[in-house]
Image (cartoon, rainbow, N blue to C red):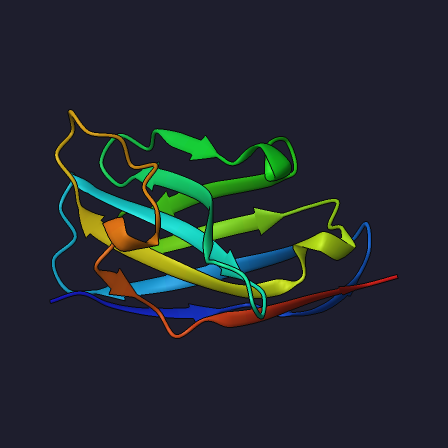
Length: 127
């Protein structure tokens, strides 16, 4: 069983930065993928960034490429999302997720492809 707890959300002006953290408890193996998803009211939860916990290989959705950086600290079992050049459209509830995914399969999966979820942390970007 894996438990995830996010922190670091808040309010920031457009152009600013925030860093989200996700502390994982339980047995996270090298096979695990971890991801950051976000959701706004009335919309589906969308994947923002993904990382293979063992290799550190990453992937991003187009809208955040070059502005967000996903990383992990294996010793601390912690996932991060550094968000720079924030835009109004980045306002959402952000969730971290984890799943044991074979290395021959991509980490880039929809919400249904991840079993473990945190409770979410709100990010609000204002003008």
